[in-house]
Image 1 (cartoon, rainbow, N blue to C red):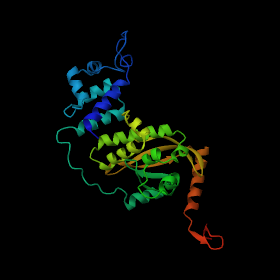
Image 2: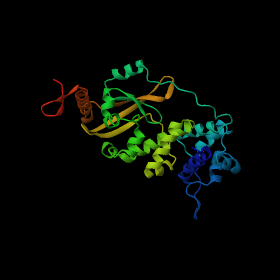
Image 3: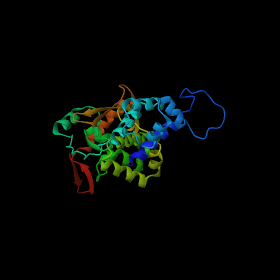
Image 4: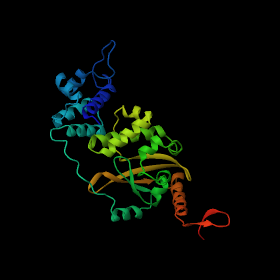
Length: 297
């Protein structure tokens, strides 16, 4: 990812979405040549010179102070995730920022897996690339289509954009796609030296014009908590709340749990999911007479 282009695209996209009225500027009749705010209006709102803000929008923000970044974030009405992304971009173009990326050890230790397995709700461990690095039995059952595919590490981004089964799995596939792109955008801004991230983005851009279109919007989101409505192929519709808990030593690798409101059909669905998962782990043998594969007695 070319960082100057990334900074330019991000700031311009945030500027384009704000009308002068939303920014608190007086209404001026007449045709405006640009959508949203002009550069000079952002500069005025942030208390900067037009020349300085123009340099920032061209990607030269490496020397910007915290107060300047805060002023720009305020002028552009950035939310917490967007503000953090702006700080990440500035940090990664600062002098001396391009250091060798340290080697990381796997966060999935035996004790972490034990904690995962002790949970009574579906749980997975995922990173900023949306790889599913580990799961408990219910987590594997919830994402059965990903864990049974084989080959690469299960990845939610590939599933959402490249696997036709995602259309049936997500009740709102557009929302799922928007969330995936926004999370990958935040991840790419945070760690530009991660070749696996840039490789994944390149792969998705090559094979999905839908991904490329959404990527060009420069939307940013951190994965923390929310709701996910899915249609499991064996259980049916479930409305689940998800929560992320960062693992010690790597705040960008987290355990994600899925729960349902007690007494609801979705809670009943999770109970059925546990039963279904238990049937999937039964040893299977060949039925010699019928030529079928059946559970052992």
